[in-house]
Image (cartoon, rainbow, N blue to C red; front, side):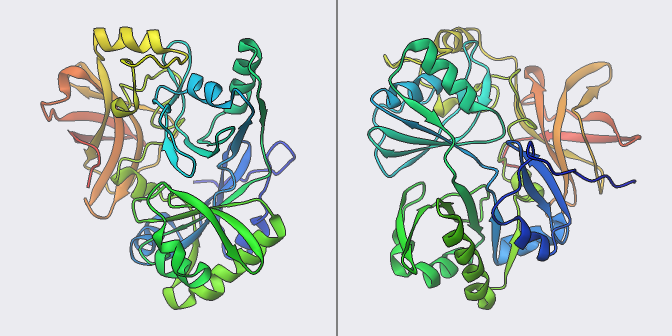
Length: 368
């Protein structure tokens, strides 16, 4: 297949770490929030095995922050998400679907409460900052919405805890999952959360000082030699196997949070107010007719750029939205939007992908 390259410009920003990761063997970028996001170093499968055994440092600065400050900051944040944040605490992270007035998905960020009048929304790939500004203006809320110069490094993998303890000392290991705090390194404070887009464990470092961040980046690789540290990036195999959904790939603005399996993050019973609540109440009454599920396909490789129909005879089973070869399952696994009548039937399906006809079966998420 012919290779194509991404032309850099001011509309497609690099990160403070771009020069370093390119020297470390980067082979591919993708785009995310109008930025460059590393996509490959040594190949997805090789990086998958390394991530599951050792530790990687990811440049995920493309995971941008929407900062909301002001008297009505909590009101605006709650207005955007169907998750009840009325009992949220300073120092905690919250996975929270953001929806529009029709109850359709806009983003599935991590929301961080820094203090009673300061929040960060740590984004998947969509322009939530503009959405927040529009709501704030339309509702006349006393807030300031901005994108701060915050660039995230993720330290992921089973040895991430040893590496972070070596750099930030014992206190870092006491951080609870989805908790955050400030930690010192060589005279600089770093905002660190116990989180990350993998199931292998780790941390995300929200870097507010670029120079200090570059020094920390270098130190992570020096200190991490004994743990076999390598540069990495969100891994397609690991995230699909574990059912970690990708905004814009597995779901988009045509889907609602019930269809995406976000039921536990939806509050339609309390008196909290958010955009799209009436729509979700109606969807709940009518019940959904489709939902995201896992699939296994009898192939040993796959490339896909758009969703692919899954058929059972002449009946539409659903649409494949993401797929990758899984070394664990020894076949292609994927995430698909499946029609209701096929949820519990383990119905076999046919599909044509990359010009080849294949068969597959439906399974639950996570897949392994």
